[in-house]
Structure formats: C-alpha cells, structure tokens
Length: 275
Image (cartoon, rainbow, N blue to C red; front, side, top):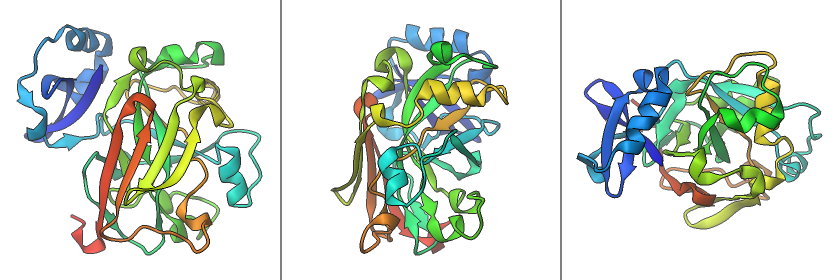
C-alpha cells in the first residue's frame, strides 16, 4: 500500500494511492493518532477520488514528527571521508520544517550542497525499549529520502545541525507499507543519480547498523511515536568525497531510487527561489 501526503486547504492530508488516483483518509495528525483504524480504512478503499496528477504532494508526516538521521552507516562512506566506523549509531536531528516531497524544487543555498540518498523508515506504533528481534514489528513502512547537506555549514563545528536543516533540504517520497516491502536487510539496491549519472550505488544489506539495531538503540533512550522518521544513512559516492568535488548546482535534477520504493526526484534551483 502506498501512502501519500498532499495539501488540502491549510492541512496536510494522508491518502492511499490506487492506480492513478488518491483516496483521502485523514488529516496527518489524526491519521497517526489512530493509525490502526486509518490503515484499515485505507486497505478497504477500492477507488480514489482525486487524480494523482492533481495533488499538491507533501511529506506524509505531522509537524510534531521527529526526524532522526544516522551518519556514517555504510563502511565505504565512512572510509571515503576518512572517518572511523562508529561503535554506536551516529544520530543527529532534522526538523520537519526542512522536509519536502517528491518533485519539490530544492534551493541551492550554498555552493557546497551535497546529495545523500537514504532509506527512510517510518515508525508505526509507540516504541520503548524494543529488542532488535522485534523492532521491525514497529515499522509502518519505508520511503526514499535525500538528506541534502550544506557541507561547509556541517563542518563549521562538531555539531551537524546547521548543515542538515537548510530550507527544503529533506526530500522524502511516499510511504510504502512494510507488508509490501519485506525486510531491508534482505537487500534493496539504493541508487542516487544526478542528471541521470549514477553517483551512489550500494545495497541496504550493507548498513553498519541495520534498521532493527537502530530502532533498538534509539528506544533505549526515547520513546518513538507513530509517524517518526529515521533516515538510515547514506552509502559512498557523495559529492564532497569526489575528485574534483561534485556539489549540486541550480539546474541539476537529483533522483534517489531504492528497491520497491520507486523514484524520488527533485530539481535544484537558485537560492533566491526560497519562500
């Protein structure tokens, strides 16, 4: 089942994609507040009422969702930056204000803007002290994610927050529910392309810390709630590590494609096209 967010008036609605149409289910906060009932409604829907081509897509999350990102989670990515593979997941945060949907233009706010194709994980039920053996039971689904980073700002200090929260710098795609995807540890190919050129090409089975390990780790210290997002890390091939560096520029089109999740595609625009 594919769940998509879209603008309706001043609200973000969650709907289910049925062919070339969308069946609206509930406003985003209400959707996650009673997730089991709303998923049942979505699964029972037979036809959509809004053409997919007519929606104004938005990330399928609430303003209160937490976006927890994992750094250095592929061996080759750590190596290309000269970093040691961490002993524990390297966690940093994004705010939902930085998130955008498939197709939304991303402003190039600095000359060191870099792509990071990642697997996004959406939590489906409240999770506290979850053992890794049961962690996937708490996953609603998965999405493509692009953790676009202003590298210069990321490196100003040891804290990565400024470089990871630029305007419209967190594109994410629709959610494909876990019952249709299976386990990412079984191996989903992750590929990032810029203007059609393959820049990143690895497999989710090669993560340093698997999705269950990340969830188990996080839930030792915080309760994860339905709708929270984990961006699980990017593989090697990022722009800053290339010789010469290959940072994004206005006019570029960046695509992230993972397994059954489809393609997340966003154009890069000039900084003055911010709101």
